[in-house]
Image (cartoon, rainbow, N blue to C red; front, top):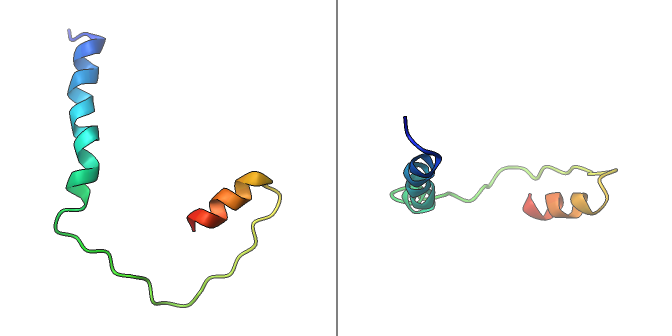
Length: 54
């Protein structure tokens, strides 16, 4: 049976490598479709973060 340390070591390498592997060979195309207009209400400061992320 493996220890917790072994599990974390085996899991951490793929997680660290994921951002680099994701961008290989794939170019993102800018979205040129219609603009989606929405209202984010009742979330307080969280609504600002969500709106900026969109």
